[in-house]
Image 1 (cartoon, helix red, strand yellow):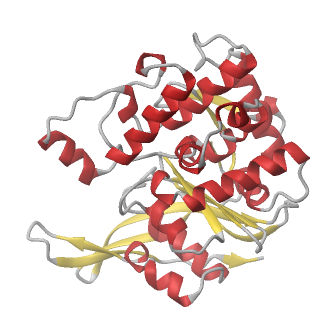
Image 2 (image 1 turned 180 degrees about the vertical axis):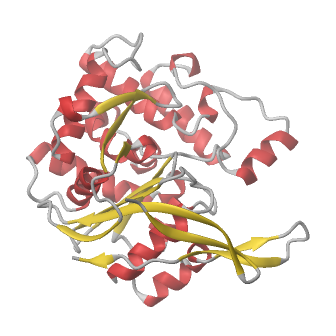
Length: 336
């Protein structure tokens, strides 16, 4: 059963609650911490992107197109469509000799409320580059070009590219391909469901890849470094993913997914973490839950926790921007 992770208070009363599940494992699969159901099955959603980006390395596309850290990082991103994000997407498409019409991800406004408002005020013209998943799609197209796969229908599960990605996810998360349930993500590509235990295991190995095959090990090391060297690409200005990576001094990578999923790989500590908010809320529940897990695992220095405090106990405001309560954790991440 999921447990209550987050309370939303208004004055002295808990007005709302968010239930969820979380598990931390090492790269051998040993459970270190848990709350709720460590085998809750859900979709990885965009938390899968750092793992999916491994395939861009395996295909040879990173070497062929000499992708730099910012380009690798934005492949792993759910970016906010800021100008510096769009510049990198343009650079990638130019390297590939492709254009926006090749991106089969759809056109949406920024997933950041702040930047969404900015786009509306500026009458921003939407293109596929605006999609928070456009970097991932550029990586997929790059792999297709190197492997000689058709660019048509590259988002379909039956496409060779998606089969390659499924196999790499299976390897990293140690779950047979036939046990991974497949749906369709918001950006039209296949999305993969598995127990959060396996998600945490995949991220533990991503951050601590010393026991992986050499090609996977090299890919994981480069992805980890790229996300740390270019954290602004992973979400954007004031985004939790960006700030979490920026303020933890190279010790971890973290990635948000829609419907309240979050995965972290912690280097050196040999830990992978997966958190799922049961009701799918990621706008207020996921950040306090994740920071509480990190605090209870004692993986962050006091200064790092201080830099992230705005995400751990979030003020609940009224219409006059007055604090009338808080959104805060109410659980202990249980050590096994």
